[in-house]
Length: 141
Image (cartoon, rainbow, N blue to C red; front, side, top):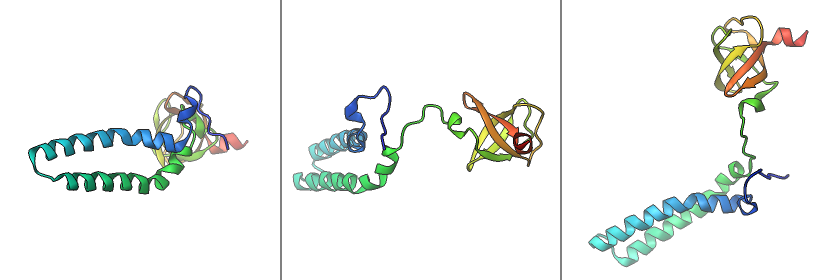
């Protein structure tokens, strides 16, 4: 399974590298706060060490949970990935409306005649983040 992402350097292809880079801002913030708190005398050096160690252990423990999401290919045009999916018109759909597809609400427009609320629809195109939908009955003829 290749998860090659166009335009990304090859070292960013590995999920562990991407996860590690996502942890950098949190580590910098933690380091800054611990430095300030240590400077004020609120924590001892040993306490600072243990807080930092627990933080790193937390990051290591959470990696297996994040890994599946980091391995998925990044889709530039999510609406286009829904081509062929079916859903339900939640409002009347003509020039604009609302549809429910795969558990998500999407703005939509009809490819032909107006579609009444409650009818089944199928995604037959996308215009940016707006789905172009057709009634399911019209698509199956």
